[in-house]
Length: 261
Image 1 (cartoon, helix red, strand yellow):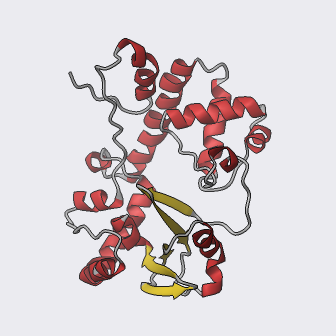
Image 2 (image 1 turned 90 degrees about the vertical axis):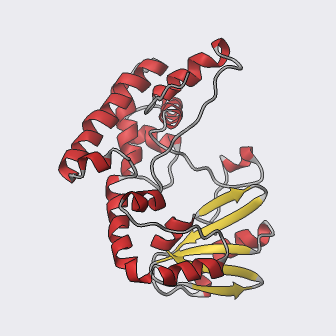
């Protein structure tokens, strides 16, 4: 029997079924649409490119006549999210109301609060709104606690529940040691570290059209420390390949990068 579970309802299944259905249940997480899928929903087919820069560059020129249209879809994608339900609504005012009233409120109060028996639902909502308003920024559990009149341990627990319910995603500092990643703090940083099997893919975001070699000290330091020979830089319009101190850097515009990765 197959059953579709949306939102944080999956948390209830993860929590209660591991013992009672051991060996008889398989979990499949279905995430929101990628930009590629979102654009395909809008009738534009895009071929696969892989990680090879020359193939990516060819795709760039193949799509150059549609780049403005793709940029328009990218802005819409960033604004409304990758929910397939959007294509049944296609009205931003209605859609934002659905997100606020149905997705957020129901997932927090109907599912997360009930599943994890939250004693302070208002604090949970406050933590969620704070994290959402500061998306992609660094945070500490103590800092979240101070901003929301809570305590450090409760804030840490609520962050865990929100992440387990797929309402947020927490990115740790990357180190070879998981324990050290929780404490690591460096000035020279790399924005994103992806892994593909044993292959590390460092990615730096520089959303502008000109990037000097000196702007890449953080990611260059990472490549040297972890013996990585290929890195990627997300740009506004720049597309080129450049070698710096033996490291090959592929500079790719944001819209194209999101279609490839």
